[in-house]
Each structure stands twice: as structure tokens, then as C-alpha cells.
Image (cartoon, rainbow, N blue to C red; front, side):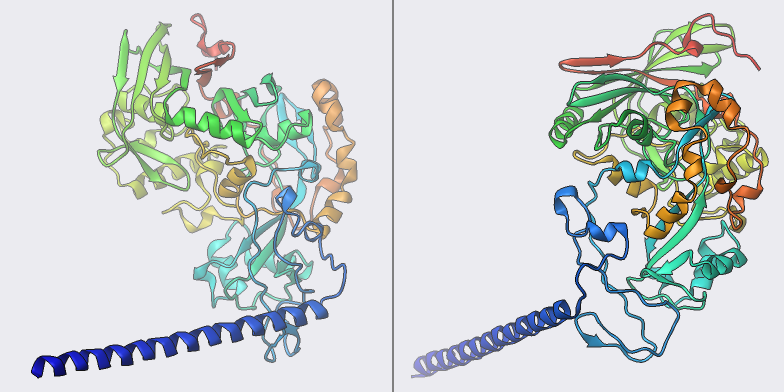
Length: 564
């Protein structure tokens, strides 16, 4: 009897629980149906209120054009002035906003595989002077979404604490001229408080550092891959302060080649073989070869001192000290790394060394040569005295990572060295007067690691060069007013006749100056060859059924002697 009573109790409780769960499930379904209906009604109401053919800027015309990889979000609501108050309007699904409340549109999705186009290439043009490739200054939009640490702060507070490349007084003047926008609305004053998903746009007069004027030679273009001989000093893709003076933009502007996928990268100061894939399929194929270790890379460099004869293999692990700038050092906690070296020649002071990286770590060759006590002859980072009296030989530094980074910045600042451009932006431990801008920092000189398969050059640019977007109509108008920049001299004349370009460019067009731009008020000396060229060259790139190589640089020849 007791057993039967227990069984009945279990059954009763099971039935009750089952009934309760079924009831809860039905309530949940009903609730979801109501939410769906409500969302549909709000969407219909919002669609009915939206005016037809709203185009607030060129990028909006292509919103939703997924075939070209453009923005896929809906058209934005007409902007209202940021910092204004008191107006009631409908937005965000037809919900009424409280008096003084700002409407913040949802974040817009982007396809990271978008390629640069003629619209980007036409922002400005090149001219050649004193053997250097230079870019006429131009107007450009830097964009970014509100960071978590900015929420609740005023624009003035954010500019004062995080964007110190310019003074607060500059930003106040920029506000008066409509150069700073929040959610596409002109900012009235810097006291506006930032909220989550706020989208900031800063229109600046952009100056790019010069690079060597050596032409970019195309070694192969067979429809599947593009192989170039990259000159030293030119970054592969837009990053930091470089945009038009990059391999990607030079190929697009001067050769009409775009929509490329990076297979590997070279440091900014490194020259040599650089490989791009034309298609996503080819990119994935080459990436798989990299993973399977089917690709062989061969470099040559000139190092200080007499490098040991015979083959020398370094297997010291490498640790990234500062991820944002790619600074590395030998450390037991680092990743597995292996490089094979062999001396080719010695001229009594310096040695030419063949390098075969068997793994793909950032700055691998440079770090291993530093560890062995034979840094590359003119390596501005790993040959620096900031590493201590032994300059990092044997992994002996005697400084914390923060102290090392600080010492590097101070050394280049004291020398007013061009490489400070690579170090100063957004570094940990950098003094407050070092400055920042909307752009993200460049790595020290790029990276030598292969990219992920299918990653386009635009994707790399957004990683290294900040949250860059298409120019607004206002920026396009400002650049259009600089149309004479495109004519004195034009790109074709600059490419074909550097001498003519030198003569024509002695006096920059007046439209290339901006009354708010602090850079326009500074006269900077041209960088020297030692600042632009590092004696490290990618000589050969070899796969199972292909091999691409370049000529040996002059500095790698046996009878070469360094001149002052």
C-alpha cells in the first residue's frame, strides 16, 4: 500500500509539472508572437515615414548593395544637430524621444572584404621631388564608434585625454567650421555627452610622409597572382599615417590593379618580392600552402660585424612586447621560432647574410639577428641603443617592456627621426605630449606574418589604419576645390618624368594648404636614405610549382662600401 501511494504521488507530481511546463511554453510562444507582430508594425510605420530616395552622402547610395560589398544597413535617418536640444522627433522604430534626448542610430554593418576603388584613389595625386614620392595634402574623414571608456564623457574630455595630436582650441575651431560630426550631424559644441553607439567623424587636412621615388616594378600578373618588387620605405597597405604612399594605392592609382588579397606582408622598411592573390580562391590555396609549409622564403641582409661562417640556426622563441606596434623580443614565454642563416660575404666591417625563416613570426629575422649579436646594419629599432649596452644580444635587456618602449620613443624623438611616426601613436607608456589621432597606430614597420585566407587589403587597412570609411560629400567637395592639385603636375607626368615633376612642384598650389592644419605651418626636412632604407630584402618566394625572385640589391653586393 505504501509503495502504491508513493507511485501515485510521483505520477501526480509529474502530471502537475508537465502541465505547468506546457502552460509556460504556451505563454512563451504567445509572447514571442506578440513581439514579432509589434516589430512588424513598427517596421511598417518607420518605412511609411521614411522619405523616398534619401541620400545623405555618397556611401548611402550604395547601402545594401551587397554585390559590391558595401554597407548592408538601411538608409540613415535625416541627421539633426548634435548638442542641440528640446526637439521631439520620431526615430528608432517610431518611438518618441524625450525632450533633449539625442537619437543614436544602430551600428552599421560593413563587409570587411571591400576593396579600394577609383573614388579612393582620386582623393589626391603624387609628385616627385629630390628622388622622393610625395603626396599632395588632402581632406580626409577619420571615423570611429564611441569606445566603452568614452561613454558618459563629453567630446571635450575625450579630445583632451585621447586625441592629443591637436589642442582643444583646434577642435573648437573645427567644430565651428563643421568638421566634426556626431551621427552625421554637425557638432555645435564640445560639451555634448557621448553615448553608446555614437558615431564620430573628424574631417582633417591629411599629410603623408614621403617615400622613396623608386618605381614599383610588377614581376608577374597572370590573372591569379600579382607579384611586385616592393621598394623600401613603402608600407604594403594603408596604416598609420600612410594611405596613398602604399603599395596597394600605387598599384591602384598607377596600374589600375585593385581588389587584391594579401598573401604575406613585408615590413615598411624592407624591400623585395611581395605576393598578392587576385581571387579569394587563389588566396585560400596559397594560405593552405603556408600552413602546410610548402612555401619557401629567402632574404638577404647586411649585418654589423663578421658573421660566423657556415650555417647557423636560431631557435629562440619570440614574444610580442606591444601588440599594437608589433615590437618583439626573445623570451622563453614566446612562440616557437626558427631561422636559418648563412654568410655570403664579408667586406672587413659588415657581412651579407642569407636568411631563411622557417616560421612566420613578426620581425623574426630582425629579432634573431639582434639576439645573435649581429643586428641589421641600419635597423632603427632592433639595432637601437635603447635596448641597453649590449643592444639585446643574448636576450639581455635589463628593462621592462614598458621601459623599453619608452626608451625607444625617447631616442627617436631626440633625433627627430622619421621612425617616431611608427612608434608614437597609442603606445603604452608614451608621455602625454606624444599625441594621438583618430587613426589607429601603424605597426613598427609592418608585419611579416601571413594573413588569414581570403583577407582583402581593405580588411588589413581597417585593422591597421583605423575605422576609415568612404569620404563624405563635404570631404569630396573640399578635395574637389583642390582640383588644381591634380594638374600641377598630374599623375602621368609625375610617373613618366620625375625631373619635370621636380621643377613643377617647387611651389605647392595654394589650395593644398589649410588654415586650421598645424602640419601646414611646419617645414620638415626630407628624410635621408638611411631613414628610408633598411638593409633587408626579400630575394625569393618559392612554392611547389612557382618561383619568384628579384635582382640582388646594390648594398648586398660583395664589393659594396657604405658611404656617409
